[in-house]
Length: 184
Image 1 (cartoon, rainbow, N blue to C red):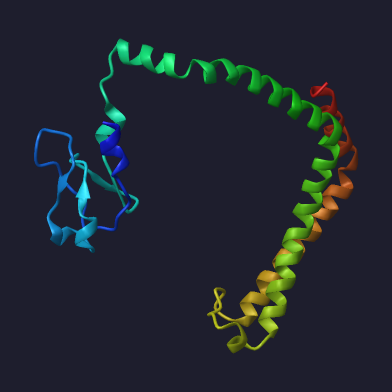
Image 2 (cartoon, one colour; image 1 turned 180 degrees about the vertical axis):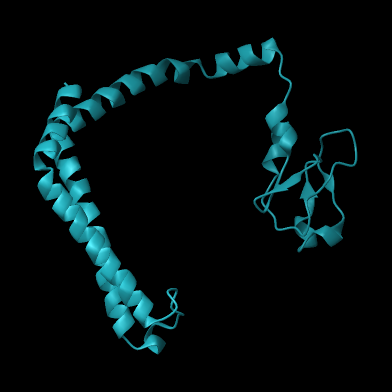
């Protein structure tokens, strides 16, 4: 019932609780399973550990009849009527955005694909030349020389992407025109 659910709270436990009775009600667990005995209550369902959370997997497999589905539809009919309208508005808004800003988005992506490896390479090169005790972490590349080689490789990648973009300017303009025409 609603009053039972309002008493639920998130607690840290040593192991997930298991159902000991047939009724779904609040009752106390074994206090040895809890870090704080005052937080050792749960609603009575069997739980499994999923990503460090105790989850009742039966909640996802509820056998609901047609009457339950109809009750759910009655409870949410307003939201179900609004969703298509919101989807149409967002869809046309997205198309308008792409029509007006699609070319800018394409150029921003191209500039980002050139500048991001360039920035990372510069950062790697500068930290490879710096005092290792200054940063307080170990080098993931095995040493400063390897880190410099990775920086050189990223600079080369950045330069290659820039040259490819220069060589394919016409294709990029055609791609922007396609984006504009498909959003019309």
